[in-house]
Length: 195
Image (cartoon, rainbow, N blue to C red; front, side, top):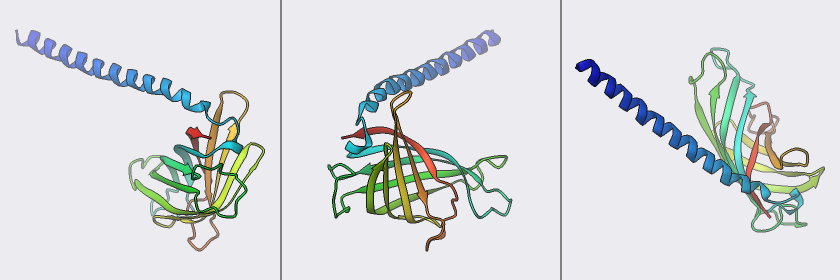
């Protein structure tokens, strides 16, 4: 009798877990289906006024940990707001362009989970914005936590072939007063954009 009860309990637990998994997957599919509409934003970066997205990339740092590890996975979010104007409008004042990002870093390799940490960036000050070859480039400075920050180049590229989407990247200058430890551009995608 106790085996029968034990089997019923196991079956009940498995059923509850299966329902939860189906619910989570279903909610994810509904959300993914809804976000497909967000890609119907600006047809070119010339008209972009705001965007937001995710960062997900693998980078190498200049300085190795005592264990010798230098390869990291980065995951986070970013936002760009050009104050209701086109990001590329001819202007002398770029103070209404706002950008910020935050991301987590974790080791790529056998020490996954060790030394995981995050960085935040704020107080972006744009110096220029231009478009060439369907790529918006915004240059400025940003303050970051830890040994990150200073001169930054932000790019959003609209791809005309295949599915309509933007890609995103930002590049911290490794030769500035902050002496950035990340050696590679950090990439991601645009998940929402407006004109």
